[in-house]
Length: 124
Image 1: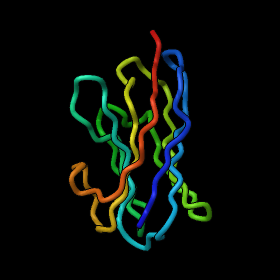
Image 2: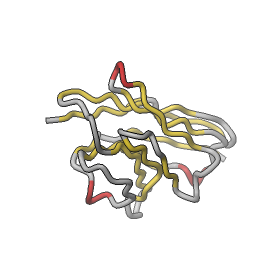
Image 3: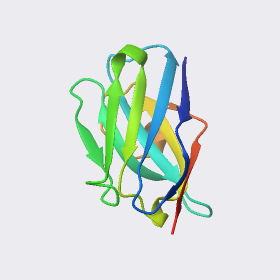
Image 4: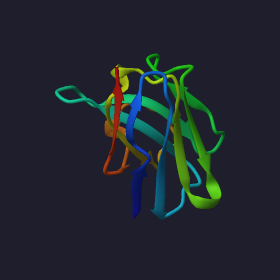
């Protein structure tokens, strides 16, 4: 059993930065991946970024590439999403997710565990 809790969301102006945190508790991971997704009102949940546990390989959605960075602090079982150069289009509820499967996937259905979400609002 794994529990994920996100934090760090808030209101920021265009061009600003935020760092989201995802604290994991319960079983630790020796394989699998941690990912970030987001969902804006009236839209489907979309992939943002993913990081594989074993080799730390990462993959980003084109919409955030070069602006967002996913990282992990193993000692505290915490995964971060550093968001820079924020745009109004980034406004959404952000969710962290985890899977024991050792796969880089952008599909939400492959993830086994989800956080409750944290709101990010970028003002124009």
